[in-house]
Length: 205
Image (tube, rainbow, N blue to C red):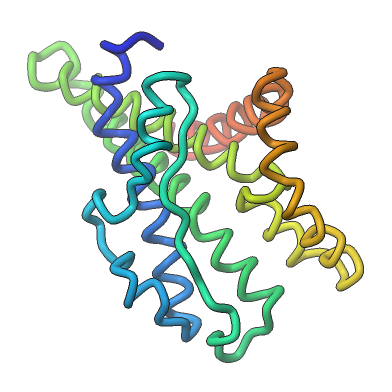
């Protein structure tokens, strides 16, 4: 992806990252943890969610990250640590899939108008919105810390398995970087992204 493509995709990137992090914070807040509220993360303003180093890395290496939402599981009400963190973690990818699904619905509605000037512009905007949200959801579902998939998987495993997943947190970022640099990460999440796209496309079209 060249710099022109990145600039065209920038609105979709900001929407995907902002809604992803907002969803984490909102679910934590609903579970009783007001940490995201007091840190100003319950907003759809992109600025509080941007990690400027991660944002710059998007343009340099085409891989970046947003500012993680901090939560305090001790504040959760009605759920334990494992289930609470699973729900908070699941919220981000699910929000991205919801955005992609909405984009596909709008795309179908606009297909009769795609040959008009405004229709073609709107379709061109929806394309990146759909693909970026699906890719972000699939990538975050990789079950390796610090990605959401690790806590989602931990929430589904028995306590012994969950403890093993949590123990990987100190090594997770290094392992993830290794997967990205070797190209192994794309071999994991691209098939998942294609599957998710196929399911959503099949539902809408």
